[in-house]
Image (cartoon, rainbow, N blue to C red; front, top):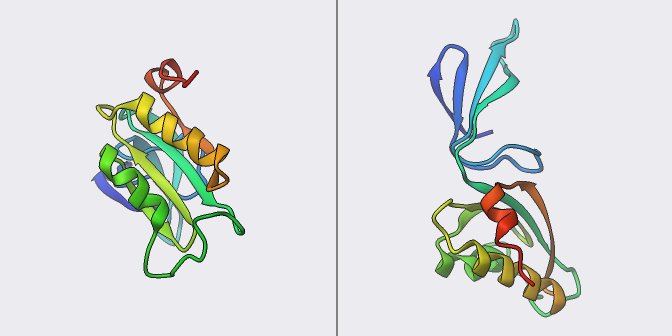
Length: 134
């Protein structure tokens, strides 16, 4: 997990972790170190307002063939101000609170209808839910 230490027992996420529910870029968590110095999350202290969305391109969809150097999923969302981390055909999107959430949702839904990808919400806000596409 990419994070910056804020104190001995607090971290801020630098990007959404892969597959972790209720965690998004910028969120602050209380952590505790174990005997080896590894940090374990105890609780979320502050939500950042960012959303985290897992997107997986379909293996036989129109975005194929995918190249390991490119992440076409991230490329599709970049014009909307969405960043993230990806490899091959999967990505976790970091959706900023000031993004056009309705446009991001429309693109996610369009891509699903077109067979480009499937997605799931890892961490979303009330604003995200309010921007649901019709």
